[in-house]
Length: 216
Image (cartoon, rainbow, N blue to C red; front, top):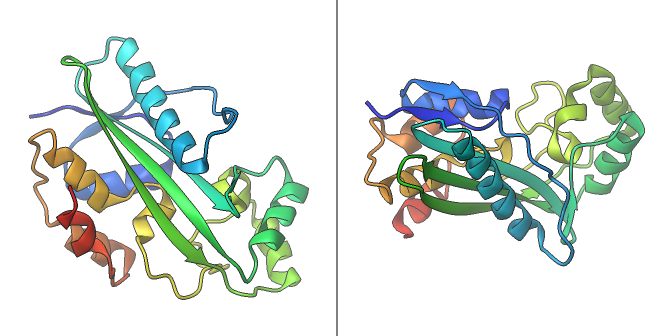
């Protein structure tokens, strides 16, 4: 059986990758996530996902490494994790009642062969016009402080997103249909119906999975 190494400490990525049904290990992949001069948010996440995969591969660990990086961008400017509560307030106010983009890059790397494939998912995310009191309660929960863009789409209390028409899993940090088609590029067939298990788990009727899986 193929050994998978998830180069991420994110509980959301662990939750989503577990839907494939494969056993996997967690491998640390600490890299400098500072943006490079002149790169777009999409270019940044691709570079960082590849850097994370290479970091784990350089440590002599064998298996198929899965690395990912996610950022939120508004008007082409990346919004990372908030530095503190005041920064979370600033970000949530900037996103309110506007549509922004979430970019997630995934990189698969065969540590033994050195074979590496990357893919990029981008989703338009329309935010609802939530109130200041909702922002304050959400920040008080502590949830935004470790999230790119200072929010979690799946948060039961805040529900910041309205009318999403793209990949829900991407906004959570691991676009599963993009991952499935990248795995097939390594001749690895997922043992489950990926769109079905994803939609069932997230309770979301995805309008884009067929188009994603058709693309090569």
